[in-house]
Image 1 (cartoon, rainbow over the protein chains, first blue to last red):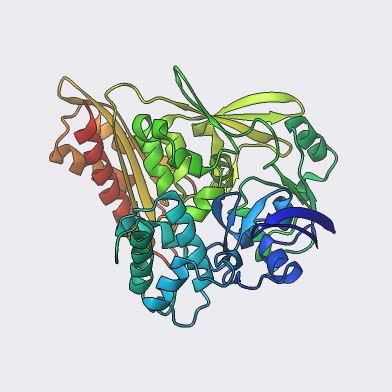
Image 2 (cartoon, rainbow over the protein chains, first blue to last red):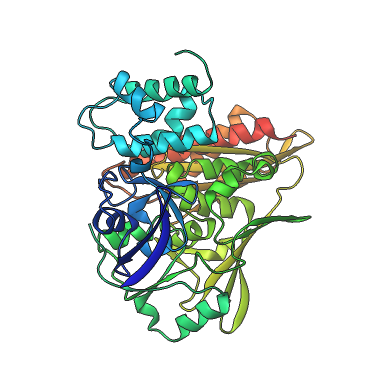
Length: 158
Length: 289
């Protein structure tokens, strides 16, 4: 077992994990942050997207042991004190989800995109979110929700 | 999906990493760079090492540095760093195009240049770029350092000429000669997938004739390959549609036995090699000055 100290969703956190555990398993099993989903385990679906030291990664492709000293942001840190993040609100308003299993990954990936670029083109949104799979919506509503959020964050009405 | 149990070591220096290699059965150790190929193999239990040696904390293995002859790229430099580099985008555009074709954003955030080279997937972009640029690979072992040329580096499927006990530390990327035009073409079902087939081309045009043409294919053989027979057709020929047709036919003939799988038949890959090498070389001709 390893003893890991990391900052997770803004809080100083300690947890124990097996040497061979993925960050995904540590988040879900040790920290009960089950908002982060397991889809494929191979980095194809993006359901386990988290932001690791400022960079979007698949938590299934990072070892928990690598989180020592790291800053990890999951979907569970996106809303603040019960107030939805604008992305979450626009996903609801634009009906950008159906079954919802992919939604945490899309929210985290889109948040990371908007932190890098608050005025992305539709092509840039699609390129950035290419690592996230949705089997229900056909993507258009997701893309629209992200573009509408970006417009709101820039102070434009959508 | 959970990996089979293994021990984990995260050395801070290359000396420490080499020490750990020296103390263990090398068949049982896996070196981990960005982990974007190794972690799926561990999760699926296709790889069951007893020790994973994580290179992410080893000092001095990442970053890009430009010298007069070209770039020096630390083996642990992520693709993100190359993708976001204005220097790479403006001065090494063929390397930049090869970079953004790899995987998705999160894969490029974590995956490393050295990791892709050592993984040596026959359908991946970087080994092909290595042949296009004549990159050099610096490897370290307890016996010291040696340099491997790109043409000697890739052996076959997932296999390089790095010996057990050696660690790739740096990739040297020469600048293409002034006036060199370049082209990059890849066919994949979706952006970010491994290529079905891809082609890189470079050429200069001097006195209206092609000079030093180079064609590299990936996804067309057991490793990235140059196609000397196709290159020979163009040397000294005018940069014309007729020359490209002759070159394309030579490429088709040279790709004798490509992979055949669920994604594409061997016959289709052969034809793609012809079509994509022509498109890439056509781009290269139009960019040559």
